[in-house]
Length: 375
Ligand code: F6P
Image (cartoon, rainbow, N blue to C red):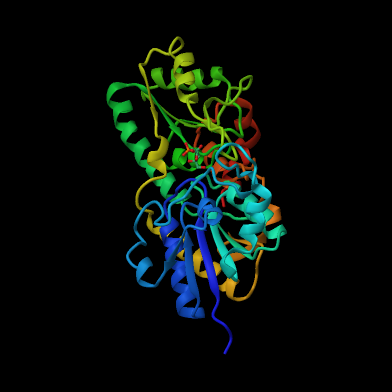
């Protein structure tokens, strides 16, 4: 009889709704379909480096489908390729060698975003057998139409817009909501459309203040008397930079964005009659229970990752394209960002219903063809 598979599992980077759905699906599928032994690493790559492990049985992962966060813990700082011992010595080369021999595992499933896939690619080059599962509320991973977590984050941001809408309407105000998303505008675009925002500002389309003022003023005199603005944390003025909230020194991507909404409020207030209020939604978008879509996507991704392990399809990340599960080599994902392309159907749909992206010429470019581009 063939030796039973021994498979490790870790969650890397920021937490995200649906992580536990994936942990459950990978573990249950490996145990039920492939009679494997599953071992969880605690706190992402830190657990791999420090060999902090926990066996995962079928019952350990029962009842976690609906839970937010990750039962294994995570870290967006741990990187075996940049590992310094207390006192400052760089011990990365030894750590990487050590990880590569780790615990005589047949494979490790890594659930994470761009940073996790970049580390996974480096470990693959050193001979480790890895399979990736794409996680992030930002939806910005190359090669996949969706990452799990995005749908829930978008739903939370949409609910926030709905709530701000009623105050905007009642007080005749300009209400600004700032969403997360790093360098991609997916959350702001999808929540903005779902919440009926009058203005959506995303990193992919640098905006002009004059256009935002024009929309607010037109609405002030046009009977609506309020304006709802949904802005991605990575949005920027045409002649400006992204607003950095914080630098996290020991993180693979140290930049933390945030605060553009307040800059817009300050700039707008001298030009519109309405009062302006700003809400920065922040980590509300990442916490709590995943919605049905992310539970399903997480389960499908996890089951598929388990079958990839069983078939020895290593060095690849699970993807979903046109509704079909597939995979892509880590090397094609590592270090890249999938931003909103100019021909995104949702962009065209928003333009078609008169939403402003703070760039008047864009409407001129897409206007006539917008409805035809809606998939
Ligand atoms: O990548 C997910 C994300 O939530 C981004 O949208 C956001 O910019 C960043 O992580 C925030 O990171 P942290 O939790 O370290 O503040």
